[in-house]
Length: 84
Image (cartoon, rainbow, N blue to C red; front, top):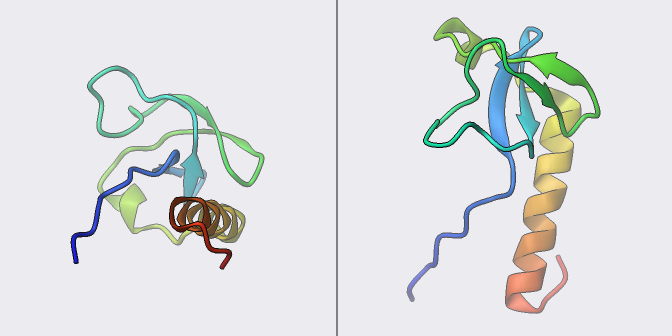
C-alpha cells in the first residue's frame, strides 16, 4: 500500500511560552516563522514567533493541538470519503 504525503495547512510555531499552530503563510523559502513574526494561531491568539532552540521544547498549546487534530481528521475524511 502506498501512502501519499499530504501537507497540512498549518505550521507549528514557538511563541508566548508554548508551541502554537498557525495557517498564516511563512515567508518564501522559510521552513519556520522567523523570530519576531506576528502570527494568528489556531487557538485564536495573535502571538510573536520565538524560533529559538528552547522554544521548540515548550509545551504544545492545548487549543492549537485540538484544532490541528480536528483539521487532520477532516482532511483524512475528505481524502478517503469516510467520516472519522
